[in-house]
Image (cartoon, rainbow, N blue to C red):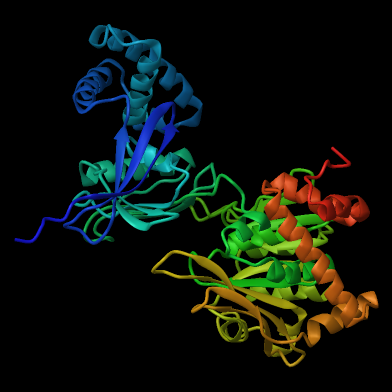
Length: 500
């Protein structure tokens, strides 16, 4: 008789969700192909949860909680304080033996479940998650884990009405609404997370919520190298182009890491230039000491008024004397036309576009709906293509390509999927010529410059210099005090920054 397969724990870790200690177990169950993400609230047992639910029902009777009150930012703190005072009295009645720390956990749990999004908030607080999804009340919540990809959770929402209620809370917190008349919600939450929600019958199986989490720790070039997303040699080529103010497009499919790469490339900006970023969702994060103006689009209100589009911001940014312009994503012809006009008038532009390789990027740019004339394409010097393996979740820089004068791409760097290595495959034709034209450098001097940059990048990884501000300071030292920086790099020691 065959031995029954056992449950396997693949991983386990802990974090705090509003002071509540949470344990996560990633479990492979013998009867399921998809691993499970199991939430364990460490200080609250199942029995205690039942008692807390009884307390919650008692509180709702005592305190009149209208939905408007709960979601009104001005009243939220006042309501929460009233709730906490009432909770404290009830907790003492039901749990007279509980110490102060346990009482805090119980209060936080009740606030989550009465004023907030219940167990959904626990998922929102896990830094390992990229996406949180509710498909209907009939199935558990799903999450996209940074390491394990899509996982089923042990969290269910009680009813379709509860899913709708959570979507309504998220919408009203940012001054929007979702209803039968307006069954679609696509919005940016105040913390940078992006929420999409749909209501029946638009989503026929049930109400849905999709939350894409904003990375709390900004991506830097060091972190990308540590994750083997990009090699120091490939990163040095991009750094060279950024230093000499050449424009770059970041291409890739959905969730390939385009914005993360764009953020990391911005690490190479010098400290004495003005940077304007334009996004639908605030994702770019730059060192605090840079001269940076972040701008975000605004959707129209319920009456269709008040919209501020990416095109509006892009046109306006040209009047703000920027040295560098970062654009979240090129989607339409007008945006692309203004963007390429900005490049032709002397601005360095960095933007993302949906495409799977360099050839496809040019095809997308030169055909509807973007439809840029082919003659304008060489204004962009480099295309950096990001790739994500959907089976394993790994992300890699797939190609780095220069644009030739006839608008064809010349692939300088190519990722080899079989060996998991990134290789230099062709010599530069236009990139080195452009840099040589404006600097007077020979090819030999450009290669020496690349070697020096590669050395600095490897040193960043060895010294674990990975925060957005520390990487930014290293780059600032490079541009303003390179000899000082190279003393530490050559000695293999951690730097003492020469300025605050």
